[in-house]
Amino acid sequence: MSEYLVTARKWRPMRFEDVAAQEHITTTLRNAIAAGRLAHAYLFSGPRGVGKTTTARILARAVNCLHPVDCNPDNSCNICQEILEGRSFDVLEIDGASNRGVDEIRNLRESVRYAPSQGKYRVYIIDEVHMLTKEAFNALLKTLEEPPPHVLFIFATTEIHKVPATILSRCQRFDFRRIATGEIAANLRAIAAGEQVTLDDESLMMIARKGDGSLRDAQSTFDQVVSLCGPTVTYAALLDALNIVDTELFFRVTGLVKARDTGGALQLVDQLVSRGHDLREFLSGLAEHLRNLLVARTTGESTLIEASDVYRERYLKEAAAFGTPDLLRLIRQVSASEQAIRWSAQPRFRVEADLIQMVTTQTAPEVGELLRQIDELKKKLSDPPASPPATPRGGTVNPPAVAPARAPSPLLRALGNTAAPPPARETPAVLNPSEVAARWQEVVSEVRRQRISLGSVLESASLLGAEHGTIRIGCANDFQASSIQRNRELLSTVLQQIFHAPARLEVQIDDAREHVPEDAPNAPHAAPADNHPVIQAIIRELGGEPVH
Image (cartoon, helix red, strand yellow):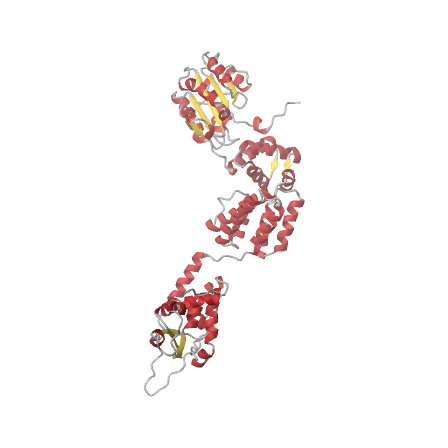
């Protein structure tokens, strides 16, 4: 029975062009080999599982191969076979996490003096180089800057920010990219064909998305699924094997939002918990689902959606039921919920509350549509009314046909019908002087309730009369008059609420009240400051006492 190799090892790229999604790096390295412009040190950085160590091994074989083909190793000569089998003395792979001390780097400095035994270069591949200590980096500096001509250093790291700047300045740096989901799916499709494994498109895209930009992670997931499902993998079996939230549940969430179904939201959370799904993973998938709807809504296309063709078409249809503001609001709510449950003692309760909030929040109007409707409304209000037709001499004019009632405008519907369309013109209400006199104290009380200082000033003033829509108020001094003038808008609103008719305020200074001689028979004996309306309000409302 032959030895089993995991997919990541069995299908490891053997040539530069086999490395997925890193053409900007592999092309540069091949050109450098062809031109004889190899650097003495390279630094490969990037996320896990994107081909850093694999590219380093291909480069080590390519510079030492006896019969290179188009700057690629032939992988069949003696040197290539020794490197592939890990028994070459000219290519040394060092784990930076296990050999991170200064003593190991000193041993490396001693070994670089020796010439290669067979090939042209002595290659040192240090993986996870950021794990070296500060002292180890310092011990490596001089050798790294001026190594012997037969030495080639290749460093690999997933945390480039931890590598000292003195090391970075001595290396040619190459940044490896995350691998797109489509490229991972294409790689897995080729592997499945070679392994005689049958997968549908939904399963293939799900495994590729599970890799999250790492081809090696996706290949490990592929091994796990094949071990459980066998040579024929179905989407339902894949969901059970990986305990992944079904995409249909995400469509169900947006269906609940459209239907305003709060009970269904609680049942959905209960279903997630009973099946053992991770709520954070559910929220992460829901955020991606809403993002796909937003992409379909704003672009009208599905090329930016990482899903199978069936689901891409479905996203285009579902997106028509949502507005862009609604999708943006839902994405913000899901993102906030995803952050909050990390520290929540009861994550289930938080997810239930957030889903209910998403379901019950009213639909937001389109801002652009609202602005357009407001502009149209302004134009209609600014247009002058049509003049009545002139009466012909000796004849009569037929009355104009009554126009049918107009439906509420889209603006009024967007604002929730807070304002009804204006009815037919009616005779405006007229202010009744006797009603003003009878209910004036009611006006004073309402003003005092809304603004106590203004109510005190109005109480100390006198009502002189009301005629032709104008209410005349007499004040004892300029202070009272200016207070009423400053708050004319509030007073007009109160008068409109009470009398249901427009009213204009007219303030007059009562000279007789302001210039009363002190020796007059009815002159007040209190000090002028005590008669000030503000002082009177303080005494009345706060229980103050005058001090003389």
